[in-house]
Structures are given as structure tokens and as C-alpha cells.
Amino acid sequence: MTSQSFTASRTASERAVSSALVCGTGAELLISRAPVTLRQVDFDQFVAGNGLPVVVIFWARWCSLSKAMTSHFNAGARRFAGQALFAKVEADEEPHLAERFQIRSVPAIILFGNGQEADRHSGAMSADQLDLWLRPHLEMMKAQGLSPEDATLRFAEYQDAREHNIPR
Image (tube, rainbow, N blue to C red):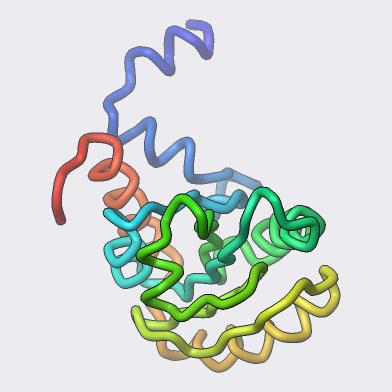
């Protein structure tokens, strides 16, 4: 069976899980290594419903600092896979979210834990600066969070609901 026919025969839930997970040695599944693009309609569900801290960058296509920050943010998503989820909000396309979180300049990064804002940073950061800013927060939140397996299931449920526009 080819991978294409295997993919086509799987359920939507299985596709959501496999697209969100990376299998290293087969012993452990890790949550998505790429930032998810969020919209107003699914923002609260994603931030509060996954069981892991969520790092959200508010950015704009026209902003050179936002563009420069993208590669560092993507690297952070790979580096912290399994410890936090990363998401992007395009501030011009989601003005209600930008207003709700009082985003006055981009890029702006907000860290959420248990659905609540834990910290924020305005302005671009290098990959090392992002690491230095985020790591202490994640270490502190680690004891409060779900197991990676529970967080993986919640993320898969979110992806499945999003794919089918099912409210949770």
C-alpha cells in the first residue's frame, strides 16, 4: 500500500493526528513543530483547550520586523515541540483579536498558560532571545500542565473539530 492510498483511507481524526504529530523513535509522539494560524473564531478554543502553554505571535505582512521574526518563531516551535504550541495571528486580518489583546505594534508575542496570558513581549527577538524569554516560563508551567499524551489527544481533537467546524 502506498503512502498516498494509506492517507486517503484514514479517518479525518487520524489525518489530523498524523499531520499534527511527528514520530521520532516510535516511542513518543510530539505535537506539531510548525505554528498554527489562528482566526478569531478558533482562538479561545485553541489557547484554552490544548493542555500545553501556547505562544502566539501577532504579526503583519507589511512589517519587516515581523517577517524577520518568522524564522526565529518557527525555530522556536521546532525547539519547544512537546512543551508548548505555537500559533500565529495576522493582526490586519484579525483586528478584533489585535484590539482585544491591545496589540499596538508588531511583532508582539503573548505566552498563555491554562488559557490565561502569562507574559508578553513586544518587538522582534532572535532565536536565542526567544529561548531565553520562553524557557523559564515553560519550566515553571511544566509541573502545572497535562502529560504530553493528554496534550496530544487534546490537540488532535482540536484539529479534528477545526477541520469539520465542530464546536467543542
